[in-house]
Length: 357
Image (tube, rainbow, N blue to C red; front, side):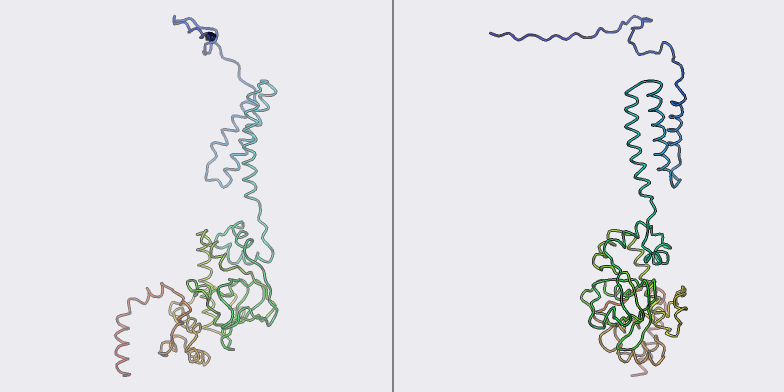
């Protein structure tokens, strides 16, 4: 029968309980050492300055990491040259590497973004005033969009042939002409959307065709997004989605204003910043939706070409209807403004219709 050896452990003796007697290894300060070298104090001052930087400063994270790197470097020099302490040096080397990596990442994020020369004008005129960062604009224009060209006389969209579901474009260079059944409507100039009315009107309806012809009057260059991929991208970024809604709405308003006043010169349209009144906005929306319809549009077009008032001609023509296919451009602001006078107007309209009957 084999016997297994027994293992015995020796415990350290307990410290003496008698008062006033100190053991050799007891943790108590019998005498204070002299102050450390100046490098040790400079390292602590650097850490202190990094921790008290206010967060309201734009570069507070970069300054914090920079001061932490400086403090760790001073501690390494102190531990190596004056204390000869390996563990202090190793730990500060680890802290130095970690903070340097954070500092490099922060500087990389703030690097200057180089926007393509052809897109800089669009960014300065349309997106920078809305506080869109250059990095975000580069993401928007660098993933799923292309720069395309059209020669003079080529068509961007053909009436009743080109689908509106494929793309959304901004004109970068040149000028385009919009016409309906051979009749001129308005021009499209640089730094403006080409097909914003169709993009807004068919957000919930797919498979529609352009109701107008868009032709290049000069050699043109435009920025073109894939509509489906752009929609998915905007759904993931709420800020950019609101920016696009504003830009497209403003572009539609400018196009409707130029449609309502075709006598404007090219320079006047380019410099036009004021918004039309609510009444003119309402009449122009009705006109644009009527022109987008596929039936009963000849009478409306003839009235517009004769120079009549857009609002009155549309109100007096009972056969004018918005398209069953194209979604009308919804504007809730105008409905709210004219909501209070609805009963009086309805009574007046009722008496007028009874007189006509």
